[in-house]
Image (cartoon, rainbow, N blue to C red):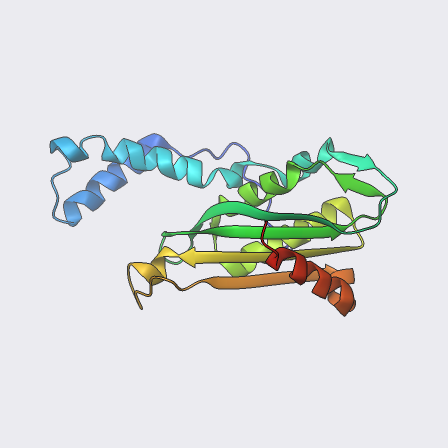
Length: 199
């Protein structure tokens, strides 16, 4: 079973369907959805959800289609400090942070902007950080076929800040290592050392 589900092309968010649900939610919370400050909230929430889940309607294969170039380069390519935001599938609360991605080319390199775009596609779906980390690594491995891929994500989760344990400074770190990064400890340590260096 594939770790990354196919995009649901054409399944756009129905603004008509979401707005009445938000109105009902506001009422159940004890609010008046007709008061001035809340009148347009159902529409705003629907548009917000449409944006935050747009990854379901984007195909990863298309992203890689026109952005691979044959280059005889076989050293590590690292893109670090990529900001991301996603919605936790357990509470529909955001988690935000930074992602570091490296790969070792196997005859082909990827256009620089494609790695941040890949992260955007996968993070704009309902997620848990552990799965998101693995999906980014798997997508690069499947579509670029490099010698190895490494991904580290560092994020703060609003569900641990505003509810539950209510710890303000808790940060979660996840990693996924494939190919050379998994079997070669020196390559893995080089990657981990590089992402810890300050600019």
